[in-house]
Structures are given as C-alpha cells and as structure tokens.
Image (cartoon, rainbow, N blue to C red):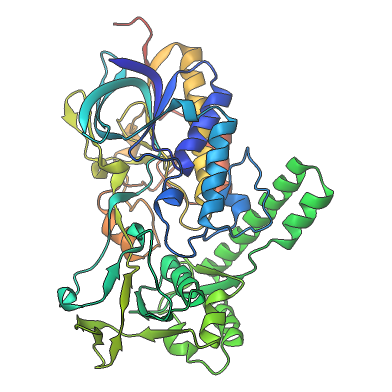
Length: 489
C-alpha cells in the first residue's frame, strides 16, 4: 500500500491551492491529490453553460500567493480554469495529481496513526487502498454526479429539451428558440443574458425574487494599481480594498437591513424604469439572508430593456407538451427549459469515515474553527464563505494545515485532535452556518457538524475574525491535542 504524509481530496480551486501551500510551506512532505474526474479545475471545469463566470471579484477569489492579472475582475469560466491550471503548473502540483481516483471510504487507526483510504480508480472502478498521515478534504460541498431538480408534474410530457446547467451539452443551439430558465440564483442570472445574446427569447421563471446587484466587470482601481505599482503591492491593495468594502456592506446589511434593501431596490429601479420591480426584484427576506446575485455591467437589465429577456414570478403547476402552465393559469410556451434549480449537496464528498472501527456521524460532531471535527484526528475540511469569496477562507485553511503539520513535527507527535473540554459539554448545538436561509443550505444543514456558542467551536464566517483565529492564534489552546508520539507503538 502506498503511503503519503498528506492526501488532498479534490483538484479544484481549493485542492490546487492546498497543494501549492503544502509544497511551499512543508517542502519535505510527500503528498498526492486525488481527483475523481479527469481534469483540474473542479467547478470551473465541470460547468460549461453559456456565460459561466465568477459571482465575486477575482482579486479575492484568486489565491493569496498568485495575483489575478487579467483586466476583468468578474471573470469567465475559461479564464478561471486557466488560472487554476497555471497555479498547478507553476508550483509543480500537476505531477502529484491522480485523476479518476474517487475516494469511497477513509478509516483512521490510532495504533498506526494514519488514514487508510479505499479509492475507486480509473474508468473500471478498480478499488485500491492508499494511506496517509493527514487528510485534507478539498472536494467542495456538492455532488458532481447529479444536480438538484425538484419534481415537476408532467415534465415527461414536455416535447422540448430539458437541461440542467451542471450537465450542459457541448452543442446546444438556442438561436431563435423560446427558452424558460427556472430559477433566480446566480446560475439563472448568468444564463438569461448569455442565451439572449445568442439569439434566444428567454424567460426567467422564479418562485420569488432575489437581490440583484449590478457591478462593473472591470475593477478600475485594481487596473490602475497594477499599472503604476509593483505587482505584489497592487494585488495586496486591491484585495484589502475589496475585502474591506464587501465586509462593510455585509455588516451594514445585517445592522440596517431596511436601509440597505431600499438602496438595492432603488438601484434596480434606475436600471429598469417603469418595470414592475416590486413583483420581480423585491425579495421577501433581508439582504444577505441569502447570497446576493451579481450581474456584471448590468447585463441582465440590459437584456430586459432590449426585450430579449423577461422575468415571470409565479409557481409551476405542471408541464405540458408545449411548455409550462403556472398556478396563475398563464402558460409559458418553450422549446427548451433550463432547470437552474441548484446543486445536490454532499458532505465531505460523500465519503464514509470511521475512527478505530466506529463510524463517524459528522452531524453529531462540533466544528473546530470551521475546519476540523471534534474527536476526529488528522482531518481538515475546506469550506469557504457564504458572504465573501470562497478562496479567502480556503487560503487560511491551507495555511493552517501547514502550521499543524510543522508543529506536529516539532513536537514529535503523529496525531492532532480537537477534543471537547469538560466546560464545553454543555454547549448548545447551533447550525454550522447561521442566519443564512437559501434552500440548498437548508437541505444540507442537518448533515453538517454543529457549531457551539463559544470559541473555538464557532464558525463566524467572518474573514477578519478568521485571520485572528486561524492565522495568528496559538495552536495549543487547550482544545487542540497533540498526541500519539513517534515510536510510541
């Protein structure tokens, strides 16, 4: 059985970043990256629907160690995929990746102080076993095998094409077709103007509105910084600017939601004069109870103003041969229906974990700093922000893993475990992420670990707090236990 110091699961944005950090900060460690698909990039390789792009700025979605150099801060999928591949090549990571390696189970042995992974390898699914001292989970939070689609009555009667954005066919002709996009999240907001630009007549069908914010696709200040300042300084200033502004806006949204709501809706009224903004763009919830949708250069609003796109707010009654009948009685005729209805979420890539023969129920554990699980040794998960760019936290998590590994070496210990103290046992279990209500997270929350009501068992989803808690706080805090010394068994 092959053995590694570290196994990283996933070769997407998080996994490649973790490997780059590891190669830089722990150069003596052996590692491999296990990727279930046959390409680098994760989300940015899997999703190929029209217009696929980032929904946050690339100066914070990019890695801390690799400046984003392109003019567009809201970048398209191919640009992001190229960026991740470049990071892998520049840091010698590609040679460590094993493609078509799908992890099915992971078993921890305290006696041996290692994880043993059962992995389906190649197209034929042949099972192999690999072992490692430390396991870094970077597989994201949704299933690559299937998306989420509600049960629509009569959908089998529809004679047109039905497509889920996660599995977009390579050749889809939409010119002069009537297209209904079901959904009101980031994917729908991207698809509608992109398909309208390709000649389709597009209707976005939503049950309820989402907050939508128009933002220039190019960051003027970032491009000025890069023109006149050294690269690293320009990048650091841009990241600081964008993190500060987004944090300010998020905090203001939580403290003065009605004020922020009025501002957001008034901005839409300016984009769509005379439009029924109250019905189609005024959510029932407060800003940042769910993630805001970003539309670069106001492309969605431009498509609506040009008459190439429309928004319908209603509930689906059933599908017909020619389209969709709504609860109101209206019928939307369509040649194509795109179900932009979300992701099928998966906790830790659906892997079954055991510790010394006992199955781990992650929902019964407490999260330690949003990264580790109580009583589960040598395991860290990367889970980014819901209110900021994912990679900000992914970078912090990767740095932390390297700190842990180096400290274990210094102490001569083979195991690190977050353990509940006696004073922690009366903690009230809280949701892993609080005050965030979108359906895709609600469907998943019961399967995630709990957070507590005190540090370090909280998951604040706050970059400033996390920098102090993850990057700067001492490792030995009375909770994190370094144990199982070298040569003890």
